[in-house]
Length: 146
Image (cartoon, rainbow, N blue to C red; front, side):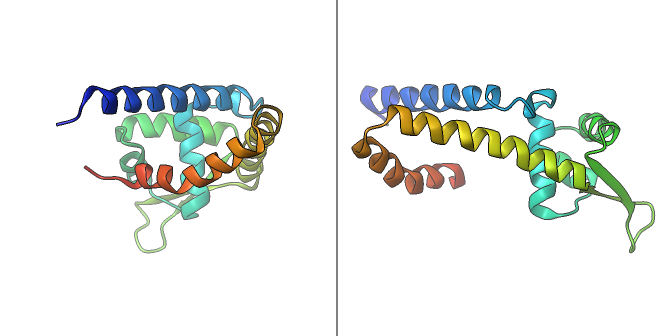
């Protein structure tokens, strides 16, 4: 179905993107205290404003029990709030606290700042323009459903 060059290209792209993601994680001192799932959960809460723990677990593709541990840690740090649902008092809505939002935006800023500096220091103008053109196609990959 795919020839060897296609597979090698896919492998090279995967390796480069994985290494870049790992590098970005290390370049945020603020984000180092949190696991990848904790940071991702905070991002989901920032995006959706409030979610049920079961919704978060589904989005993160982890068990409800694992999400409970994530949420307990974020709550202990003061990064989330828990509020009873108005429609069903048995359900608890999870939201980012003001401190949680501040921390999320801080570690995003740290990563963006490092990446901007790395691009400025290593890319030629032509390479930068090439990467700018690749952002759209890379986003298509993120949205791809098999």
